[in-house]
Length: 367
Image (cartoon, rainbow, N blue to C red; front, side):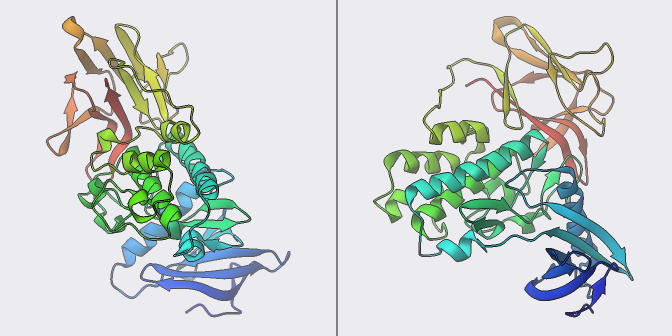
C-alpha cells in the first residue's frame, strides 16, 4: 500500500490522490529536493489482470519517454521499488475538457483553437509511427487555453502496445467503429478528434450513429464545422480525412481537394504522391536511398523494404524487398505478400506480429 506522505524512490513524496480506477492510482507527488510537483501513476495489484495493469503502465512510460511535444504530457521518470512500479509525469494545472465544458461549450473560435492544438499533437505522433487510440475530452487537459494530451496506456508505437485487439480501449461515442472490432488506423484518431470537436461544439457526448452532426444539437454551429465533423466521423475510415494535416487544413481554409486520379502512399500524416512508374520505400542507409524514406530507430523496416510499380493500364503493384515482410490487410487479416495488386484504400503493414499487430501502417490511395 502507498499512503500519502510516503517517499518513493528516495525522491518523491506522495501527495493527494487525483484518481483511482480499475487500472490503478493517479496522485500528486512532490520532489523532495526541489519542492516541484509531479503526477505519479502506479497500478493496484489484486491478482486479477495484474499483467494488463502493469503492461499498460510500461507502454505509457515507453511511448512518452520517446516523444516530446508542447501539447503532450511530459515524461519524467519510471522505476520499480519493492515490487511496485511508478510512472512520474509532468504536473498539469487546469482541468480536463470533459469537466470544463460538459453542458458549457466554449465559443466556436475556442473549439477550433483546441482542435488545432490536438491535431498538431497527433500530426507529431502519427509522423512518429504512433496512434493514440483513445482520443476523448477526458484525456485532454486544458490550462490557460493550452491543451495537453494525456493517457498513453492504450497507444501503439511500432510494436509497443497492449496487443493486437484490445477492444477495451474503445470508448462509447469517441472510439472509431473499427476499434470496437479490434482494428485501428491513423484515421481512428481522426474519428476521435471529430467526436471531441462535436463535444466542444455542443457540450454533450456523442450518442447518435455516426457521422456526427453538431449542428443538429446546436443550430448555431457553422455549416463548415458541421461538415468537418461529419467527414471526420464517417463510419468508413476511407471516407474520413486521411491525415490530421488534411483535417487541420480544412479547418483553417487551406484545404485542396485531391485530383480524381492521384495515386499516393500515406504514412502517418504525410502523403507521398507516386509520379514515377517505380517507387521504392524503406529506411535507407549507407549508399542506399529509397524514394520514400521512413524513420525507424528499431530497424525492423529494411533499407529498401518494398517497391511500388505502375503496370499496364494504370494497375499498381507492391513488391516485398524486405527481411521482416510486407503485409496487406484483406478479408479481415494481414496477409504476407511477395507481389500484390494494390487497390484503392489498401492498408499495408511493414512487419506484422500476431500479438502486437502491424509495426508500421501505410495506406494506398487513388481517389
